[in-house]
Length: 81
Image (cartoon, rainbow, N blue to C red; front, side):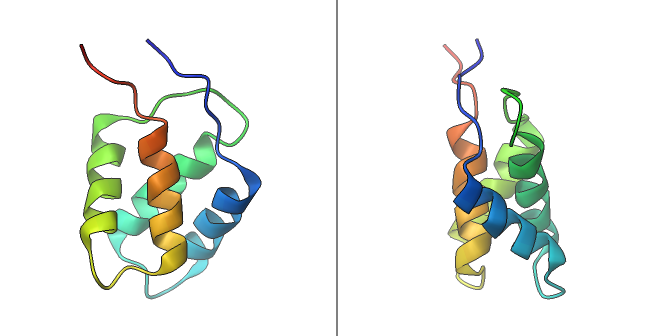
């Protein structure tokens, strides 16, 4: 079941900053890429991208913009029943 959520402009800007940053981790960039891919469409987040987003949120070294993009990614994750 898909959700009708899309990445907002603030989260998309944060995702863009994360992707351009040379100090961002691989999982942060994966979560940011997922958030940007859902900017205009209603696609849901894959399990792999959700896992990367979760790692980014738990990391103490992740930037504020990386965590914002990761949060947006997880918001668009479909729930299993």
